Amino acid sequence: MFHRNSTVNASKLVDQAASATSHGIAATQHALNSLTGGVQALRDEAGTRLDDATEHAQALVHRGVDALHDGSRRLRIKAHQASAGTTHYIRHEPVKAVLIAAATGAVVMALIVLMTRPRGHA
Image (tube, rainbow, N blue to C red; front, side, top):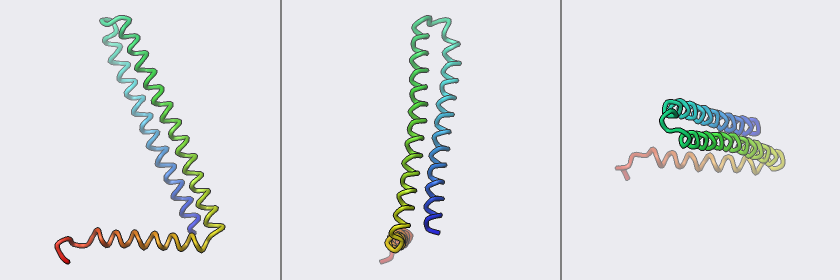
C-alpha cells in the first residue's frame, strides 16, 4: 500500500509539473502572439530595425519555450527516478521504510500541534 501511495504521489507530482509547464508554454506562446500583433502595427513606421528586434524577440521566446520543454522533461525523469528509488528501497528495506514513514509522520504532527497552539497561553 505504501508503494502504491508513493507511486501515485510521484505520478501526481509529475502530472502537476507537466500541467504547470504546459500553462507556462501556453502563456509564452500567447505573449509571442501578442508581441507579433503589436509589432505588425508598428512595422510600417520602424522599418528594418523593428524587423530585427522582432526576430530577436521571437528567437528569445522560442528559446524560452524550448527551455520549458527541456525542464519539464528533466523534471519528469527525476520524478520517475525518485519514484523508482523509493519503490526499490521499500521492497528491499520494508521495516526501515515503515519506521522512517512513522517517524516522519510523528514529526509532521508535532509541528502541526506546535503551529496550531494558541500563542498567548503558556
